[in-house]
Image (cartoon, rainbow, N blue to C red):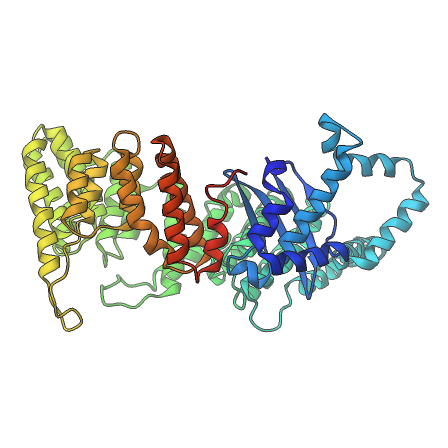
Length: 579
């Protein structure tokens, strides 16, 4: 598919003349590194003012792109993307005259492996050293392995220094910088994993703990939004657990160090609780862990609704719950959770514990106690639990009434669906539906009539909820009526247009033409691309009706109306023309 998506014409159209010319300059200067082609995606590094990572791929029939440069972050097809596309095209051109079929997609790694297999150890060593001189990450990896061999018994110190290097940061680290940090750290973790042997497991336990604490300290200054570093900490936790199972340290000593780690590791990226380490702790270790936990738990008083969040309380509660789960003692687990009944959800959690244990009467009792304790709390999870319990016991009126409470508090499609499910099960949906739609009309009217200091005048009724319900029920007539009764959410209008295309194409056209201008007025490249997709839907409908000339007039109107929006006009140039 990339063969059709990547052409010089496409690259120039997406980038614009200026960016395309600059991309050509990067291509001619050889600024693009080794291209990786996986068939449906190509990637490469481009040397500019910095080193940028570029990816191009098939995005559902369109050319998807990403680059780490600031301009691409703003949604533009940048010069670096152009350069990578041109390198790929040059490779295709070279292959056209020399190979066909599968040979055009040769695996470069296979070719490299074949070459290396023919070389002497001396040549391979020189190649590796030469690469290490240019690649800091490879250099550090080789250095760490070499130092471990040379220093032998001092391998612990070598690894600790490597961990310090990998986790050392100076100042706040933006999410865009995290990739290299995570890569360096992951390299150290991979080398630590080689210590997971009977002879080295004991030292791995200490090194993994040191690494986890070092990384968590660094995370205080890192924006790890994508979870890369957190994932590495989890991998370190897995290493630590497996090392404990392999080394079999003294149970009481292990329990004490695990308890310390669990109570001091506030980020929670990996767990040192008794349940996780049950096999490594054994009965003696579990008992010591429990002694330490119960000593701290005795200091915790029942929580009141007005109490502020306490991290220490949260941690020791989690530990006690883990111990109770490990022992399978439901009464103990309920007693622990009963120390904090400050929220309706906490009653639900206890109810679910009893339900899971097959104690349905106790489960219902706790759920009802929660509803009585918080009669005005809008936590529908507790209410949903009770509705299911009431239905199971044939307490149908209570189930329906509790579902109506939710719908009246907040009329929404989600609550409408709940009401439908319960009323349908009870065989009373037609009457309940009429009542629910009357409530929807009432809500729409009340919202339109509402005036405030910031909204002193009446507003146009918003019929989005009525349209949303009609779409869910596939009632196109009701949906069309809602569209013409007042304003509606743009996304819902597009969804309705899609449903109308096959049976009522002219109505679909009306809706598409209605939403396209506001989308273009958002003035950003993503919105422009969304608008063009809808314009292509208009094109498909009108072409099917042999209204090609009328569609051409429509495009002309759009060009005149949005002439100042150059990026939109560039995208529009690709509509209505043969590819």
